[in-house]
Length: 270
Image (cartoon, rainbow, N blue to C red; front, top):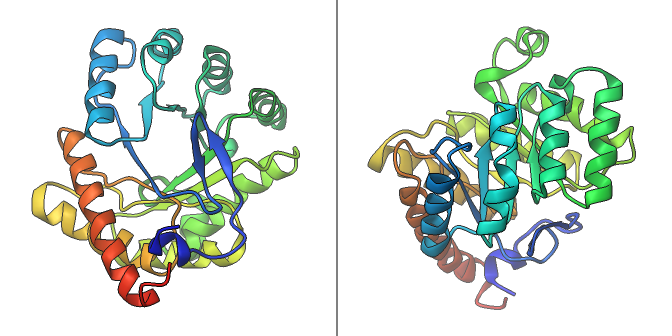
């Protein structure tokens, strides 16, 4: 067990995403997202393989249309790392993605329509044994929650996430991963610390819209690094503008440096 894993909060639920385990005592995994049109199978597969070779362990692709959803089975067949479909608003795209054989979904259940839609997605995801990541972003909070909290505070992000979590829990679905991303490092830290006390689901940690080059890496290293050293975070993505290969290089550097710090914190007794 690594020193970072030894610091992790106890009792974190473990979920399977393809061959990768997220949570429990599993190693922290590195994620990224493609920048190619998902319907362009050739370009998307090429980019995924480049990212995998660089060290990416879980890859997410955008699925805004049925055309993109129809490409997922071919992409899945051509790559070896877990494939996650990013869904917004349209529950049918989630069902299409599950049928195509993806290894995970990223969506917010409260945005895909009626309770019946949530029930259908939860049922099919459970049958396929794939997790759902509830991804809350400070730039797209529900209007009522943002108004209640006077902005996209850490508490607001957590309230939004729990609103979506409870929809899945009501359907008996618990293979859940949660992310609460803000462009503010302070808000990011606040949100994840609060959520770590609320639920035992694995947390996907990142700072959204971190930006370009040194500034983007610095914000991500600070926010993600502090959380990992507090035992918070089971999978990470460093969100940088531009070529996603830079995200993987930065994530590997972050994990290696955080591991060294974790060793010093644990006295070398992993």
